[in-house]
Image 1: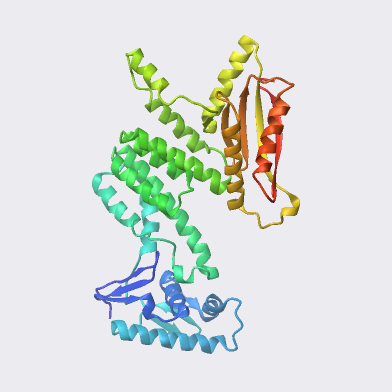
Image 2: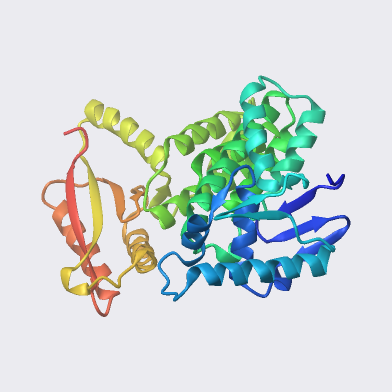
Length: 397
C-alpha cells in the first residue's frame, strides 16, 4: 500500500517528524539512540543499511556485550514509538542482516531540499521574484546545525560540516542573484540571517555590506564594516581580508559626495578635531603611509614606522588563550593611544600586532619613545604573561 501523505522530517536545529497531520517530537523518543537509529535510516533512505554498519553507527567505540541484540531491542522500541504516534510502524523494513526504508512511504527531508537548491542555483543565470521567494523559503529551513542532540556522534559531525558549508554557499549564491535582480532588500536579509549562523565568513560580510550600500545605507555599511573588521581581529587574529579591503574601498567611493561650498567642507573637516593619535583600519594606514613616504622624500623630514608584536612568555603555560590575548591587546591599545602625540597614526595589523607611524622622530629619540611605551604597558600588568617584541625603521628606508 502506497500512502499519499509524505513522511516529512525536519533535522536542522531539531528533530521532528510529521505524517498524516501527526507530529513526533524529539522529546517523545526518550533516547538519543532512537533518534540516531531513525535519523540514519531516513538520511540514507535510498540504500540498504547493513546490521554491521548500523551497530557501528550506534555504538562506535562503546563497550557493549551483545550489540546485535541491543540493536534488535532498539528497533523494537522505535516501532512502538512510531505505532503510538502515527498508527503505523513499518516506515523501515527489516531484512536478513540489513535495514531499508519502506518504498510505500515517500519521504521529504529538509536536508535534501538544500542539495536540490544548490543544483538549481548553479544552473540559473538570473532569477525572477517567484524564484527568490521560493528559494528564500528553502534557505529558511536551515535553523541551526544538523541533529543538535546527537551532534557529537562521529557520523553526524561530518554531515554538520557539510550542510553548514552548503547553507553558506546557497545563501551567498542567492544573495548574488538577488543583487543582479536589484532586489537589495532580500539580498540584505539573506546575508544578515547567514551572519547569525556564521559571523566570521568574510564573503558573507562583504555581500551584506554591499547590500547596505546598494540600499543607500552608507553609515550602516561603515558600521558593519568596522564590526566585521574587529570581529576578524578578535576571533581569528587576522587583519583585513581581501573581501573587507575591497568593500572598504567601495564605502570610500560612496562617501565621495559632491559639495560645492568650501565653508561647508571646512566645517566638516574641523568637526571633532583630533586631540590624540589617529587610530584607523589598516587599509587607511597603508594609504597614509604611502602619502607620508612621498612627502618625506620631497621635504626631507624623518618619520618612523614601528611594529609591536605581543607574544606569550614561555613560562606562561598553555592556558593563555585568545580571550586573554584580546584583553592584553586592548590594554596595549590604551597605552599606545594615551601615550602617542596628536598626528601619530596607529592601526591594528593582526590579532597580536599594532603598527604605528610616528612623526618628528629621529634616530636618537625613536628608541626612547619605544622604551617608554613598553614600560607603560608593563606597568599595567601584574603577572607579565606577555611581552612586546618590536621593530622600527624610517619610512621608505
